[in-house]
Length: 378
Image (cartoon, rainbow, N blue to C red; front, side, top):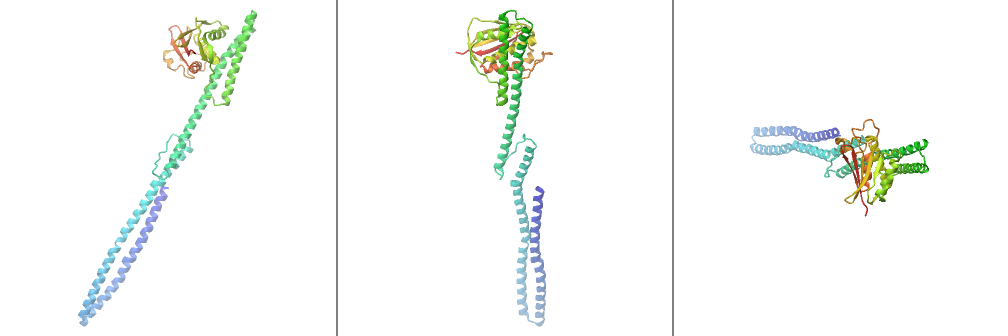
């Protein structure tokens, strides 16, 4: 486009030069030749008058010739202005085309290059716009479109990441009740239900864990057909000590490695029962997997909160891993060959915070203490 504009400027300039040049030539050179022949005739006439002795007439002719010469000089001085006018015209053309280029064509070239970047998928380069040029508003709208596309792509990436997180979270949580179902089923298969009460308890736990699996698969289904970015929490009023005693008893029944030390107080909290069970199972199963020791669970009332303590007696968590231990998919450096997804404590933190509380870890020298805080309901 720039080459075409330069070619047009040169072409227009040549036309102007040819027009003014032809006019200059016709006025200056042709009139000069004609006047020269007339001057020769006038001089011959004056010479003949002098030879005849008619000096008065000769002097009149001389005066006329002088007037003609003065008039001709004035005309020639006007002709000299033609090159100046030609130069001014060329300057005007260059200025006009320069204005067109800088105010119209160059902004258009920028938008053309910007459109090429957009079509190539490069949304990181902003389009600088000036409201003073003719494409100011259009350029602003074009750059706004780029920003909206960038936001849409960012939202799409975030949605995909959230989708992966929820699926991984649900998959992780499904493993725990399935493991319990398997353990109790093996106990029934091995005829360990030596009494009617034990058999009833085993079957009751299996049915309850089946209900948990059904609830988790329902969460997975809901997530697949909607825009859920996190698991839903449905809080209800719970007496925390009674709930913890029942939950810990079910989790530890098949192994007998978890003990709940019930306190002498009663406290109600607003929390989702199913999510709270997931929280307890994740913490206890983490302790079983990595500490491989017995686990003590206790509760206390602290500053208007119900504090749940989970204490194992293993090696704890390295201090350098502590700042990242709640990040999703993060696993500590002391996991060894144990398999895991790095989602257990991430889920625990999420459930605790959605219940209005939080979770804290502390190495005790001979084990790890996990503290979950949930506000007490009025």
